[in-house]
Length: 288
Image (tube, rainbow, N blue to C red; front, side):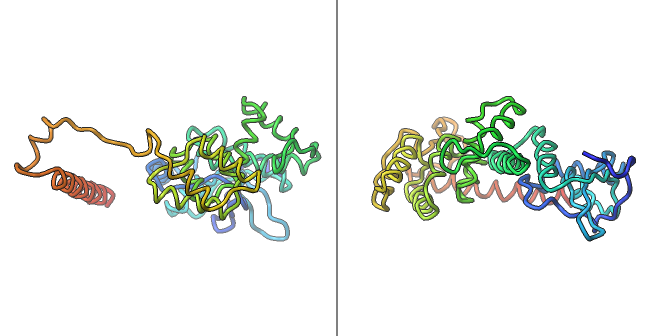
C-alpha cells in the first residue's frame, strides 16, 4: 500500500464513508459502549486507514469502521487517519485482512469476507478455473486458506453460505444450524429455502445435516417439491424440541399450591415474562 501522507491527518467525519459492501457488522453493543467511553475521554488513539474517493474530497474507510461509528456517537467531529492510494481490489483485501483478526467473527461475516477477498484476488489476475459450480476460484481459496490456516475447502464452504437467505444466515450466526447444514441448504433456490424456513416454524425445528443433504440431493435430481420439503422437515428428531427440566422439589418452594400441569406451565411462563421485563427496566435505568 502506498501511503500518500506519511503522518495521520485529521479528517472531518462527514468526509468519511464506509467501504461499499464491507461484510462486517457494526453493532451498538456493550463493546461499542466501552469504545465510545474511551474515545470520549482519550480520543481516537489508533488512526483509521482510508483511501481517496476519485473526483471528490471524501474518503472511503478501509480499516476503522467501529472507531468511526464510536467517534460519531461520541460527538467527535474529526478523526485521525492515514491516507493510502488503493484501488478497489487492494482496498477490499485490506478491509478483510484488517477485520479477520477480531476475536468475535460471525459465520455470515466470514462468508462474505472470504467472498469479497476471493473476488478481489481473481480480479487481480489469479486463476479463474472453477472447481465446482458457483464456487470461488481455486487459487483464490488456496491463498485465503493458507493465510487463515484453514483448508481451501473450508473457505469454499464458507463462501457457499453467501447463497443463503438472510433468515438462515441469522440462524447460522445464532448457532442454530451448523456450517455443514448451511452449505447444503445454500444449493436450494430462494423459494425452496423459504419453504424450508416455513417448515422450521411449523415443526419448531431446524434441519439436521441428513435432512439438508437429502433436500439438496432431491434438488440436484430435479425432484425437490413443496411436498418433499414438508415430508422431510416433519420428521421427528431426538433434539427437535429442547426441554428444560427443573426438579419438582425446587418448584414446590415457589409455586402456589393446587396447580395442575397446565396451570403450572402458565404460571412459570408468566413469571419468566415478568422477570424479563423487570430486567429490561433495570437495564434501561442503568443506561440513563
